[in-house]
Amino acid sequence: MRTGEQVSQALLSRAEAVLPGGVNSPVRSFQAVGLKPPFIARGRGSRLWDVDGREYVDFVCSWGPLILGHAHPAVVEAVERTARDGLSFGAPTAGEVEMAELIAEAFPSMEMMRLVNSGTEAVMSALRLARACTGRPCIIKFAGCYHGHSDGMLAQAGSGLATAGVPASAGVTPETAAATLIAPYNDPAALEAMFAARGGEIAAVIVEPVAANMGLVPPAPGFLPFLRRLTARHGALLIFDEVISGFRVAYGGAQALYDVRPDLTVLGKIIGGGMPVGAYGGGRDLMRQVAPLGPVYQAGTLAGNPVAVAAGLATLKILRADPAIYDRLEKNGAALAADLRRAAAGAGRPVTVTQLGSLLTVFFTPGPVANYAEARRSDTALFARFFTTLLANGVYAPPSQFEAFFLSAAHEESDLALAAAAGAAAMRAL
Ligand SMILES: *Cc1c(COP(=O)(O)O)cnc(C)c1O
Image (cartoon, rainbow, N blue to C red; front, side, top):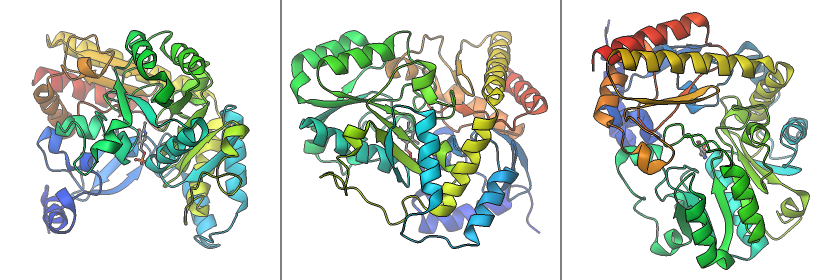
């Protein structure tokens, strides 16, 4: 009988022979914190169990999709029921219509949309559409914002890349990279200057309206309305990448929370309820340019997959029926942030804890943290030690300074108390 970390370690050895780094997505490798990742056996509610039998309170929640926690009975039931009738048809199904109607109701800016299989795919498609509709080549993105791993978006992309210290990816041609202009987040003057210089070339500004891939960095007051005015003035589209913020910071996402209507919206994560679903959408005039109605080609063998859509629909219906979920997430997020600030102060550690609803990040810098350059001032070695003690105390936090903690509706007082105690112990142990 294997004990301790032995099962995870044995699996990792086998994995490393057949998967780069032993993983199917880089951040899972725990490379940024210098540890070996536990392999996960199962999850329920706020809890995870690894293959070695250890239990954790999970603050990653699959990087955002699991706003209801692991294996929510209604979501699991929907998946089981749908799967029994067939996994995929490559033909229209009722669930896709219901899903699109539900999303359009929550996001009035998305009059029409297309379902895809990932956030990456949704961003890629939205950018193609933006270029087609404006006839312009360039996209502005913000340093530290992540929009998936399509070629043009791999420039100063935050999280996984920030962690690895790679400015952009190998394999991206200079021609492709040149069509992406990088701006600092929360900096209106820099954007004004870019539009003054190259406004006629800019098809769209894409932004995480609540940035959560350089650690959590909320938008400064007025920043999103400014983007709306600036893009409209220059005939460029405004694209909100709400893959994290959609159905998380509010049921209607950041665009509802901040009352700004983008031209195009990208969704993912929560709308799949733990299964692979993405979506992009906007006004009818724009979306009618997508094939088969228009000249912008985009397709998918498994797009709108019935089982994945069933998981997403079940999740969205629960969120829609219980708006109090968002009040509770905000209350719990604020309480955990306050506890972690107190713990840091008690241990004499200068940190900046950002928090918005169910998202928070402990930056190991006195701050402020309003953009990527400021986030990068964090002491990542201290973060790694903080993370290590949390994990040893049963708290599964994001294994990188440049990611956010995700709370779910399944987190209870006892989970937060455990996290606060582990946080205090971790601050003392630094
Ligand atoms: C996760 C994420 C993506 C990419 O989604 P995938 O499903 O991983 O391809 C895009 N944008 C943002 C803001 C994300 O957080």
